[in-house]
Length: 150
Length: 102
Image 1 (tube, rainbow over the protein chains, first blue to last red):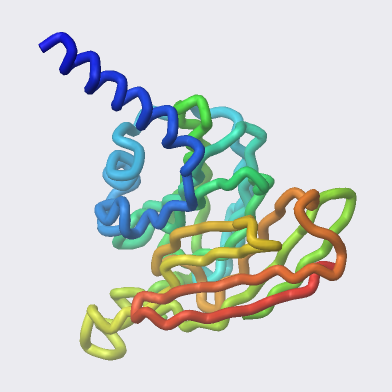
Image 2: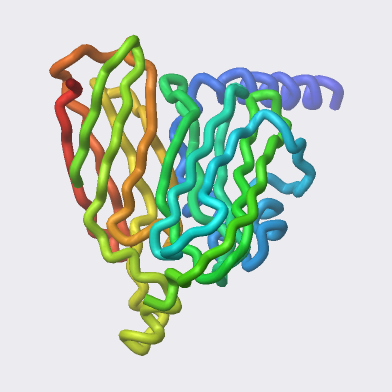
């Protein structure tokens, strides 16, 4: 019996040791399908990272305070924290998730995207650091003309 | 997909635009009468010399014809190399683009 536990432990340790080397870009839509149907930021964050506890530091987020056109709101964000993944959420649309980056070793974590928001709300950027902790930044903005009605 | 890439001081700056309607579920329901006709880009990747430099899973809330900007370390490429980008949408269609690193 002892031998068996020893063996299983060794195998477990081996798997753990091998995993980082084979880390590949992850398709979050396939691996975490619940993230994309969650209606609130908290639910989406839970589905993605298992917790909603984040430190509000280390992440820079820049958006206009008032967006004239909700159809294309520029969102710039960056972090100096060595990151595993970065997720962008907002709370104005029916679902919360906008996009999830998996950060590779060549990436510089500085991104800029354009997003749609149906009404005024706030944008949350969550950075999953390589230390396993979550860091976030949040910004409220007003949308003059909603972008989701088409 | 249009791709512009520029190498400067060891950093490659990329600006890319995908031509896509990015129909959300709500828009599909209103215009086409069927939520399931929603179609949007779900995944975008960029590779340079076989190395992945961008990998993002996206939802319907990127803007129409989304413009994305990102940066990566320039030690894996030189000027004149090609940057390849691919997107996949919900219907399974893929789009490709490439740009020379200037």
